[in-house]
Amino acid sequence: MARDNKKMKRKVYEKELAELQGELVALQDWVVSQGLKVCIVFEGRDGAGKGGTIKAITDRVSPRVFRVVALPAPTERQKSQMYLQRYLPHLPAAGEVVIFDRSWYNRAGVERVMGFCTEEEARQFLRTVPLVEQAIVDSGIILIKYWLEVSPEEQTRRLHSRIDDPRKSWKLTGMDLKSYNRWYDYSRARDEMFEASDTDFAPWHVARSDVKRSVRLNIITHLLSQVPYQKVDRPEVRFPERQDQGDYKDPGYPFRYIDEKF
Image 1 (cartoon, one colour):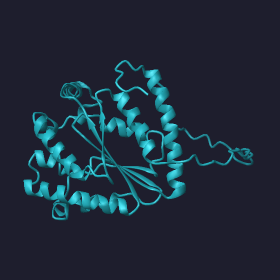
Image 2: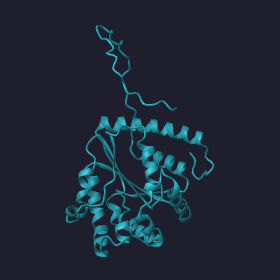
Image 3: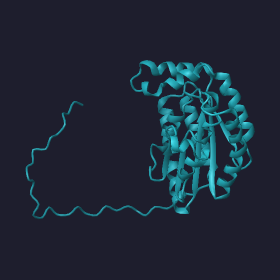
Image 4: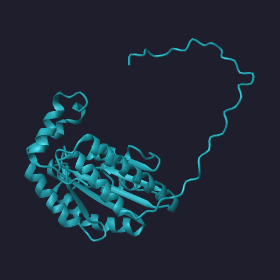
């Protein structure tokens, strides 16, 4: 498996990814058959590649089993609740894998750095989160936390690439621009977050993400190692014969076919 190979060819990447995605399907079958509950948290700097990594994980599995949670900004009512309250209903039930594309750790990162919460609220969160995660793990949930770490040079390149690319322009928000020059504020916040919440029962796993293809393969490989699974035997598939036409007749509707330009 490539670790730091910027020259990884697409064919090599796609072959490795296809094999790993096949294993993710096997993991999915095992999670369902055993009633496992898996919660995966993705955090990292802007432009670190969280979205692409999550897509690589979920591309070939069932969205009914692998569920991605990306919560919007809290409502006024939610702001008045206990901070973690709005995240708890999204935790997995038996037979589910829930992936948080950013999570309750917003409070330790962007909210703290950008002043959306007070310093005391951030410190209270850091004191509380290990207790909550202990309760999550004690309930039988397999909790896996990833931090994607990107270099300042690569972050700059990726954010600049979003300006003129219509496929990526939606990813560049005003918040990205405001937080761009806070690199070391985010570094300090990350360090304190790790110190408070990197526990034996819910450790942080850090992945270098300057090379997108490598980080996706490395994280999927690591994820598969974190949930012991066995391949579930599937019944042999036999297609039945298609029914006879009988008395059905084509009504000759003028179907509005789309133009075939390709």
